[in-house]
Length: 209
Image 1 (cartoon, helix red, strand yellow):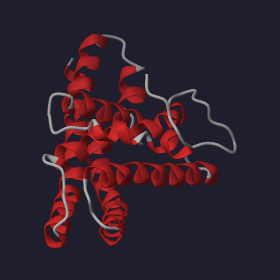
Image 2: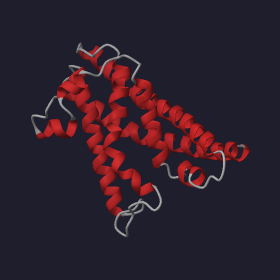
Image 3: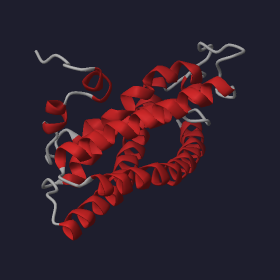
Image 4: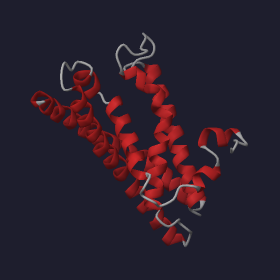
């Protein structure tokens, strides 16, 4: 068993863990499904709350349909986030003649998928009755501050993967970090709209079943 040797290892995972990320796509599918399930559970328009928890019949079929939708959304999410960022890393690496690991696109997808673990504790706040209170709910300032801190945490995890799997210099990593921060906002908005469409589509399909 491997033990963390520092607070940084505890927060951002040991460097050895990041080194184990590889370009094999075998684990990418379950990783993508995990992200999709998180996206669906955390969506503003909730398939779980609006359709699954109120279903009177066909619950097994509806759960299967929800999982298929989650898998599609999750794989789109990891690909749309990681591919342009990995392209940027490879571009910077080529311009500065710095090493970038083979299959870095898939490696970054895996890192992005697993970085969603930091957000899992927030899921109960989207589920009725949830753990919401006057001070901690999706509309509260405290919730916004927690999400902002977790986004920074996620960014740090991704940058550690970049640091382990590439030899980009500090300036290159700074550019990549800024790109991740900006791209996350745009990509998150697009995924949010996709979740809204999925919610509407699920409602129509659920009515048939």
